[in-house]
Length: 361
Image 1: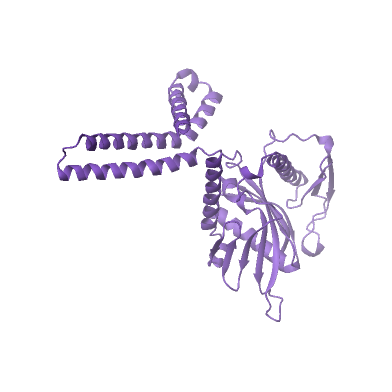
Image 2: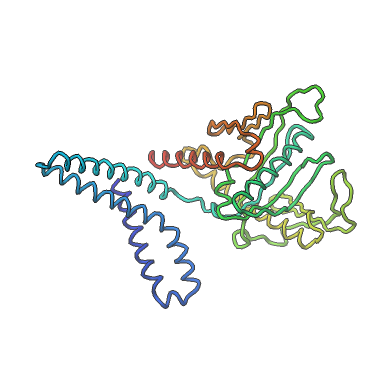
């Protein structure tokens, strides 16, 4: 506990130093320095506010104990002091829990926009139809939170399904909420094409990538093989007669990215490069993660694409997240973008695991 308190005292000193610096004319006149300081100041404010509230409760606790230790208090006054002591102790415990959460190592990608890739897996056309449903679900969830979505690439089927779709989600903290969606999503329902009324099981794979900035991932143009081809719609029908679709192969890794959503070859190339940068960033981070001992890694994590993370059972109206044992009987609401209860439970489970690992460390 002593080291914990020393760390917080150091944070408060830094905060006070920044408060002083931000009021100096020479800092205010240096836009780059002022912006960097303000970003750090804003990030530390919740932690310092909580630390000060903890200390205030600690002072109240100390004053109440001293009064009680003196003795000789009238009954009514003693009861009031005892009540104040109990309230101060409760406040300290709550603030201590909050401080531990605020001090957890931050995922550097949490504030980033994301690129999501949804691919139909086992189940043929039924899997493609469900992939389309998941795309709709995430789009509606983003809309609820005031985030923007942008289609990057779409490969449709003749019956209204989606073989694969990639799109970006732009919004504050998008990755911090959506990162838990990576993995295999399983659907159990009676397909529209099923005449016998039998329940089929199909799968869809979701990948969530933090969108990489150009400065984060340097790509040598000599490492790229760029092909152009004609954009095609469902069933192979040509959308246009120009070769506007782009296929980029990153030769060192073998990664292939395609984009045909735009009629402009330049725009398709720009979108494809955004996806490629994000995939390369993810690959680099996965290599770093493998170096971390498995015991120190969160059990909830950000999801492995090969791991079955959730089942959507339509006959029972049930959605089950297998990582945290959460089952909700509100499948229609969830498919219409009401994912808040699911994402909140995943965030809390992840924090609990990190706190546990911190305590063991």
